[in-house]
Length: 401
Figure 1 (cartoon, one colour):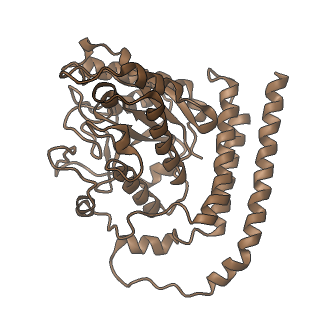
Figure 2 (tube, helix red, strand yellow):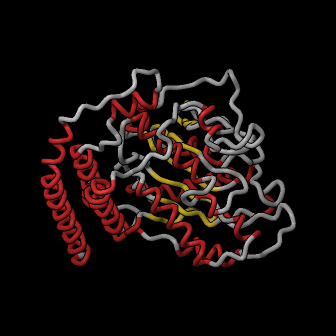
Figure 3 (cartoon, one colour):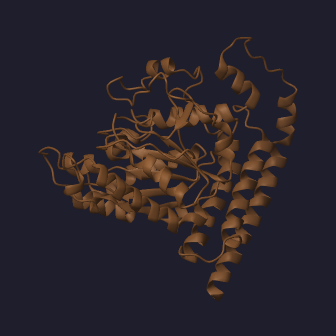
């Protein structure tokens, strides 16, 4: 117990030191900021929504006050994790480690973002339309993307992102994290899904737009389960997962990374925010490498850390949960590389980096997969319950920094 108190004191001391560093850095740039404030900034008098939002949020300028407040919020979140929550199933050491991650993130904001103007916007001419997503190569095709019926009701969503009673989850991965399940599900009224392609929010009824496939999803079920259990009053998913993708597809400058980059760019500009208030990121991917590559465990880990570094550089500091996912026997495949991929996924959790173990999806047997790979109705329910147990254990960390 004394050792834990010592660790807490050390982290608090680190928080204070970072706050002092932030003040020093802001003092150094004050003169430059004052000078820049006198320079007139002109924006075209057009109806371009992206330009209007950029002007309103002054995102490219990333003011000193914005950076200071962002670092302060992360520090407060770290202190809250250490002190505000009663003892629970999550080991205290994990709370201390995650608080350390948040203080490091605050330091990154105060230093890196000021020096480099981070995060950068890869889509400066975005007009927030589906046509733009198509022209930019983000939207795959009508056959692959989840369809949206013309009668589907859109709902207000901006208030959900900052609502402390609403958990917001970003979903990355391949088909079993998308809409390729055997049966569709209609979610509870308090479970929602955000479609970054059309900038619309819907009730989380399958299929969830923003991810691939035309079938069922584990997330609509998980939303219902979380609301029913009163873990959160409301749930908002941002699904980006896409069938058949490899981990390298999600690394910067590759095709699926465009989905992540456009989604985060649009949210930042629409909300005028720096750090994104996600409660967690779900990573459920690995079947492609396990069955179609000889990728080593070290290679998989390196690619995953590239993905996480990109998320952090773009203001996503929430916990990342890594599922064990390699099983897919839908067709004959050239390699049997399950052991290497599972070894990589098992070794990724590191609380000081904000990375935690997700569920073992491989434990869902072939009898619950309608084609030997994709989850049948029973498999979707089983997967939902596995994710629910993970989130139940980590509830103290699912705060919006």
